[in-house]
Image 1 (cartoon, helix red, strand yellow):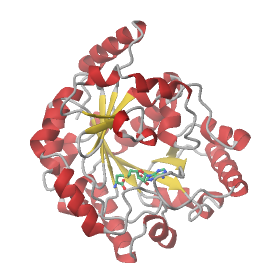
Image 2 (tube, rainbow, N blue to C red):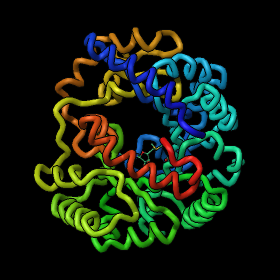
Image 3 (tube, rainbow, N blue to C red):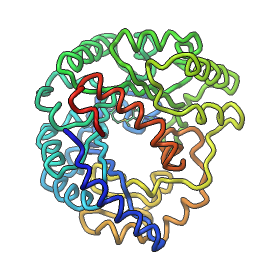
Image 4 (cartoon, protein in one colour):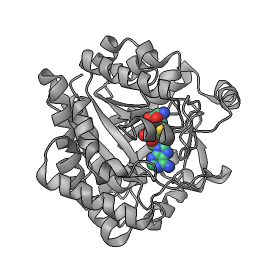
Length: 357
Ligand SMILES: C[S@@+](CC[C@H](N)C(=O)[O-])C[C@H]1O[C@@H](n2cnc3c(N)ncnc32)[C@H](O)[C@@H]1O
């Protein structure tokens, strides 16, 4: 569970050496373990209603256990951290097997999950492998949760029970909430924060939904509503330190001032995002075409990271409010100051013995 500091420092040294030589290499690995998700979130490409069709695609194209392990081997030579997501990663029958393998490679792990299936998992074992779980809880209130995530009230109740299980097993976790036009009110009236504390979370990450070109729904609130949300979150941050908000004030200030997040150069190249079939899109999913798609089963990281399409990311500012892109495009000090502080606080709540990162 403790992060291997020597390994991290060695890889950071190698990464900086490459930077000095003008070479870009990834530092964070994102594994989208499966194409299947049991949720129907309207803003997400995995939220499609045809679940039988989605399952068929997953059965046909998702990488096998051994193929994933081969990719983990390749990527772990570069990356200091891994993020496991999907689709819904916990829906894979070999989920624990894959997590255990990543852990054995000494890659620290963040698991992003909708938390609806984790009662089927041995949480006492999982606790030994993951650094923490990012719980996608877009609203803390039943009505808007069900709307944003496209699920039944029974599913909401299941997720709430599963959050209790995380507490019971002392698995470090925080809430990640995507702000859409369906859940602005709880941020404006600040009830979100009390509810988060009531549910045992002392750290939360909040970003606006990105209206994606590959989904049919626009869930971004109107400008006036976004401004009210930003003002209210900034006000809360000024006067409270709990729950810790893991996105710095600049994100909300920039949206207030410019209507979007501001960055000089997109930092998408700092992470390798591996799709469920082993492909990597360069520079990202927005430029999805056969010419921009490489398969990590066939190619190595160096070959893909030397591809000419990364140049697109130097000038692309298409993502307006997407939190992960905004973060990776900020100076490293912004990340260290805000995100790591939030993480430390959250982990020490659940695992005082492992508060060192
Ligand atoms: C794609 S899901 C995959 C992992 C898992 N199924 C879950 O729900 O956490 C990962 C995260 O992306 C967020 N997400 C999906 N579509 C988004 C969008 N258009 N803009 C911002 N975040 C989005 C989800 O809310 C979730 O927190």
